[in-house]
Length: 415
Image (cartoon, rainbow, N blue to C red):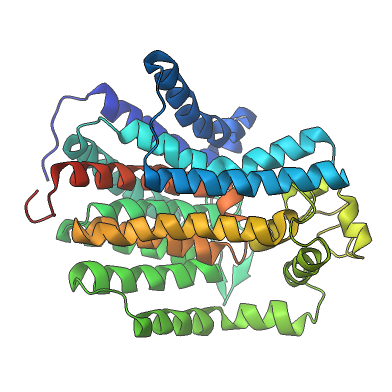
């Protein structure tokens, strides 16, 4: 693949944003202010849209975007209504968590704004080039760390040393590899296979169950959707489910059977369903349950439900405060908020599925993003986590490609 020697401002911006989001967690270990990269990134799209609206005096929203915006408005209104009614948290906690819950979707908008109007063929070349470079770089660091144990490690699993490199936790290294795999899938060619193999090994080196499951799911998507150009059918989904159970079975048994109601992850899930019932249909409000903010501004809801003394959820030790994602939505926004949130994700996923008629690589890349984030949502705050933001950035790219193909009225073979 040839890459033009000249660099446009758009290409330079894409590369800078790509590396900042990819290595944000590592940068945060050195510079505290790097922790705000994802927060600021999510605001860029809103700022640009506001400027365009003010300058043109018009705000045009397409029907498919309007439905998403309406559902997000209902979702946020539900959470805020609960905050007003129950007043379990101070206003600063509410506002921080309110923004955190919207950050993923705002980042999709920012990604769309950055890629929209760019010369996508040149942008894709440079993005792919740097994804390949970063894959080799991380793989080299992993190899060196295996040989010389340069970087810290949280311990061992399955008799092997867990690799995390310069990231705070192995899950961030796994997510970085997953992002690189997304780019390599969106712009797939036979030449990408060796780089994909490196990223799969990087994910495996973290020895996290979700990373191992994710790597297998990625290979299934690559083989079925891109190489053999097949639609994912019901039996494919069943196959993926069996893979998840087999690979993650030990961890599932540990958290939900062996610990017998003592694991924070299981307790947060069960309690969120109780809250959804008791506070039907709106939940307890933003910042009140299962999020980092819920323990930073320690929520009274934990004491009310008798879980304030659970290991990892206490005032003194909140290490498992946001160890899973869905209880945040269930508990804080209740049935109404949950239905709206799931509907937004479903609408986005439907748009990704429709990309198949334009380019199977875009379709597969979008499927992988959703698959990885849904897998991650079982064991971390996923869509509310900074690791989701580079995926949102790439979803913005996919939506720009959708827009361009629709405007041209072309399928992939004609383009």
